[in-house]
Length: 425
Image (tube, rainbow, N blue to C red; front, side, top):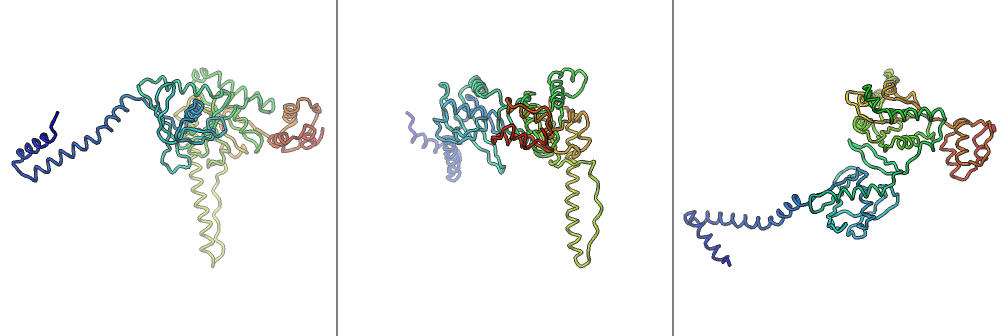
């Protein structure tokens, strides 16, 4: 056994010999040696642990801007891990269930899954954002990925195939919002002519990718839906996405619209009411006449407010022109986003710049309007198949499909609807 006391005395004597008996120098050297030994003794276990984690484990990380994050949290809950969690969060069903449920909470915990120990950590980023990201880290011993692959596959299989995921493009990435039951195109009430026109465009896009490539035509699709509020533009978007086998990604400002147009091709990119996103219509962008000064004694007040308004209008016009330019470049510039589908909507066709509407950027324009005799009859047949609809009817002006649908939900029958929305039958 090593005699520690004798070892210290011998080391002390050796240091004194090296410095020629100088007590101060010897003290400095000995203190340094002792400090180094203490630091090594303190940090050694942590260094060993970090070395082990780095070289002997594998970690999988998911963040809350992806659908997989919510799928996996839901899967772990259904596998019973939430029941054994020391920390619990209450989820809001973002992965598609819609009901509140328990989730593994924030913090680091150890769980057993299929007889394998896992370290699972859920954390939230420190951010001033209104919706900071959350991260799910799962760490296992060994370098094999099979367990992770099985977990992801099982979590995806447990989800319904008849669902559409919805995202929002936010600051250069897609952020998962929710998942809803898909809406089939066959359930959308449209004039027959409009339905056929839409089907031809969609089928050509799905079936003729090779044709686009062969002829050097960008494989992209742009659709413009216009019409008054409540006529079903948003519902039709859901059905188009399902028909194409894609999810939906919304944009809410002009900058994100231009960026997303270059990057997003796995989802239908949607800009609803695009004329409200700050994209200017150059066809209507004419400078206004200068406003004359009014009065003399109040001349300072009279000129300050108009000048301020004029300045703000100028800034808005410059931004709107820049936003439009960026979007036009993204739609058919040098970089072609293969497979991209864009749907834009507006209440008025004439509210958008003609350059944005030209063929090659927008391939199909569809007016989604108020109910006609044809679509009103189709609505009654759908909800009241036993009702005998008169051969000739005259629907009142400006009857929105959503108004009729709300009346049906409230319990009104076919005859009630006829009397309410038809002038003649």
